[in-house]
Image 1 (cartoon, rainbow, N blue to C red):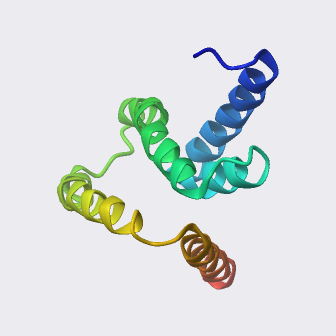
Image 2: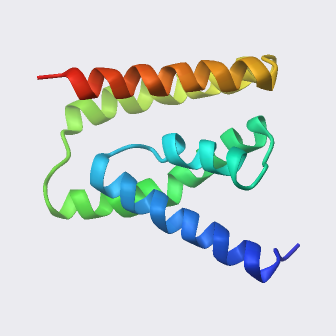
Length: 123
């Protein structure tokens, strides 16, 4: 199914902004993509999370490729986090499907606020 042209350009703008923030700050995009999909596009929480996770692949490949050529990747950290992260993502995705969206959204919001506070106050 082809999205409406206005929806396509709105989503494309969201993707552009998410990719830019991801490239600048190294966030996976979920901190931007999930709230935007829920608040502005009225996408259900679990669909927003799934969509955001699928978008990590192309967005992170673009940023990772750039950082590879800039020699800014620590491969020891990469491999340890890669293997464990894939296992965690499988279990997290399965478990989160059992959590009602109401509670999942609030837990995500608390996580974002806590992360922002820690980053703001870090020396």
